[in-house]
Length: 121
Image (cartoon, rainbow, N blue to C red; front, side, top):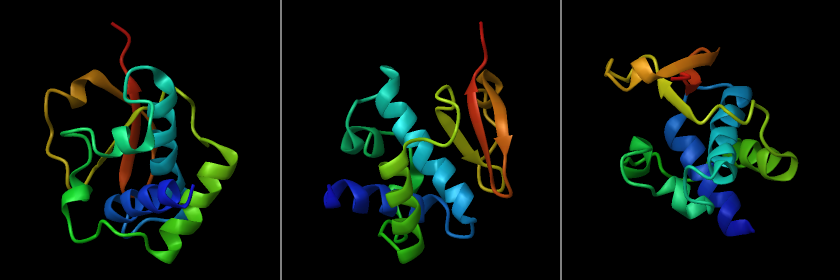
């Protein structure tokens, strides 16, 4: 359990350096939602390390900070705090507009990220 907590905390820290605790919890919620969706790997490790999904895992910010540990612990104990269909997020400041963004519907817009579901086809 501690390994999963620290892994989620490291991902949260790498993706949400300047974010509020709520936004950190949104990122953790996306990971939990992916694990439960059937569209992504069902393990924390599988989701976090799935190729091409999270740029932060390759950065020097991929470590569990005290604030990210707190957010990760709340998500692990209580579950996702966003709708189960929210499976994606991207940084509005860092992400370049791609055709992939056209397939997403932002459901939650926070200070730094858009948290999205897939558009219905």
